[in-house]
Length: 246
Length: 65
Image 1 (tube, chains in turn cyan, green):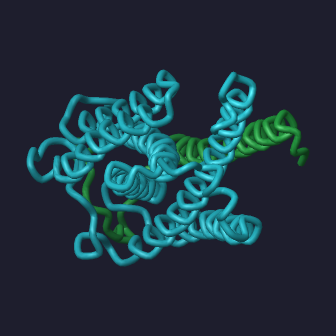
Image 2: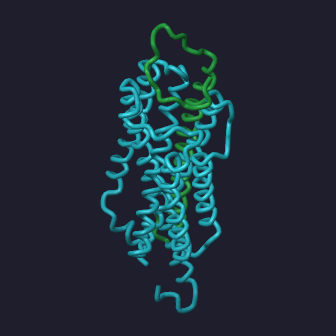
Image 3: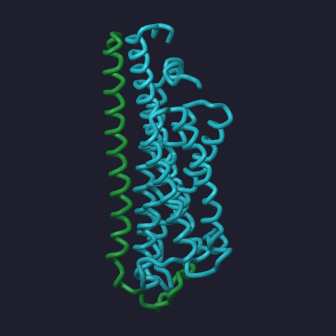
């Protein structure tokens, strides 16, 4: 397993990366404000829902970006299982945390949208249920990580659970087509009025920039924590008889 | 009101728009910003804790800053 300390030491200009990611975060924040103002001020009310349609600008981007974050979990987990680099495990964990937050946000916003349109906060229909399962799978993923002390074993178990969790993403996505119940089917520019398309895209891109920034920031913090743990392990080995071999 | 979320479409000018749902719209945007700002603060705290941990590990190893 590759040492994170060595990786951190050889990782070139971290400061310039920080500046780059901070720029991405600030751009995401500014775009999010602009896109929300643009969407709220320029979108005409919907025929059936009136201004409630505007919840789409926060609910749908949160759901899309949660799926993107879980795709990153799957890719990083696969790469960890293939190459055994601890940094990939930390990247998967960072993306899982952000994905879980976005899924929780999607569920909360869906409930806020559901009450005035469906008349209920929650119902056990396929899209809602599969999304809740996805959310709790990644809650379990993050809890699992706190229970395992050994970094290598934690990374292996997390990779397996992360992949199983990510397998649920296509089920969530397709649930509205496979079981046509209460939730509407996926929106696309073909089904959406053009006056709603651009604000939706702008909000999705803004949240994607923020999601990328959050994952990068969390990943860097996780690398630092792992570096500190490895340094402390070296210290502990130095203090034990015959420990100088480390 | 229909129990189905209809595809959004332009409302004809003569159709009155329901006004009773503003609280839900405000709640949705408020929850979003609460999540963005709350997680931003969490990220900042996590970074500070990580930096302090690295610093104390380096100090313990005698390497200083």
